[in-house]
Length: 280
Picture 1 (cartoon, rainbow, N blue to C red):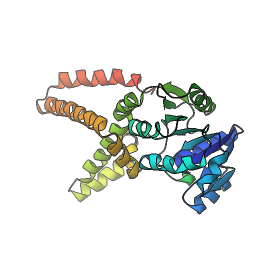
Picture 2: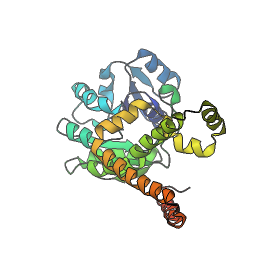
Picture 3: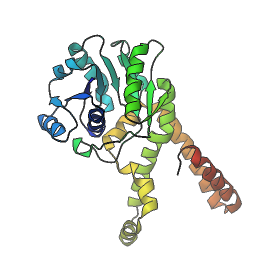
């Protein structure tokens, strides 16, 4: 197939690498000419341009811009597309995007690959980024079945694990396992940096190892993405943060009162619960 990618960063570039490896012809569009040339050189696209009209040849288009640009990008893009072109996106928030785009383009299906790294830009693109990771599609009852089938086939080719749900349920779920951890992890780093004893802070920075690396990784990622998550999934994230604050207050209470038995019971519960979310 001829597949278009609009936005050649980590996700768009990695998507291009995998689609080309599957034999698809990839057309890329970026705001910068230098990115377009780099995408070709890295093997992420077959053709690249700063002109959206390049995507008129595409049968499927993936919009891989930052969340806040997805809807305005689609509004510009549709002037160049045949009406049967299937359009999807990779935004980590779905409800406002699907709600805005569905009336504008019949063959649109919301999507969210649950994959990424702390790096950004076309240079960060890697093959097999999506393999064995969840890829969520959020079709509406009005989404054409053929459009869903086409995107499903591509997701399977990426080696991802496919899921379907409503845009609203998607946003509530990712607020727990993606958006909340990002904010908590950033808060952890900020809390550590608030240490006023310079010697202690320097020692902490030297001693930091695998535990801190694991818990701080997402907090050290792209700030723009976190702001977009908070802005466009505001209510679900606030609900998650408020519940997290409640749980944290409970743990503080147990430690203040030296209730070690209750603390251990709570930690045994979380130890048993973790495998329900991740394998290891």
